[in-house]
Length: 202
Image 1 (cartoon, rainbow, N blue to C red):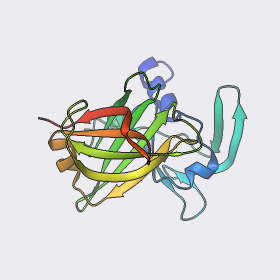
Image 2 (cartoon, helix red, strand yellow; image 1 turned 45 degrees about the horizontal axis):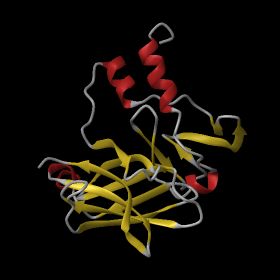
Image 3 (cartoon, rainbow, N blue to C red; image 1 turned 90 degrees about the horizontal axis):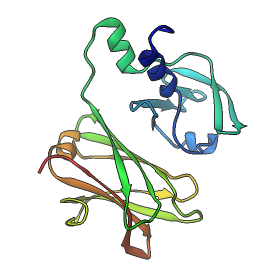
């Protein structure tokens, strides 16, 4: 693997999550979007595990982020597929949210098919104003011409920039028709949109 720069990059960036994510944030998550593009599964039922690796130390502050130490090397599905000749699953999608009107707020959305007509939606934002919550929803339509709210999601915390919501909505319905995820400035300023991103086909 050391001789294959692309493969090595995929493995290394699979160990990185954008943002300042502390242990207190991790325990409330079931998924985390990685810089590599796939997601990490997080469990807190018996200690904290990330993709079945045990977290053995937390909140080690470094000059370029926060380190959580694990006891195994993680391999993304893309690397496992390349090494074993398998095909990748199609049960998730990862896409970007763009800032609106120069708000400085942007980030990403991860939608995962959890089966049985449910989906997990995780939002990771940079630039959110601290000290408050930012409502997020899926609307019909597209950024700039959105319709009504069709899926309400848990607010993004301004301090953490994170939100993770399980919804009783099929994955194929979310990604199969035109929807847009909109981030509002605050509960009392719903008309001010700070970030937006489109998903699905028209």
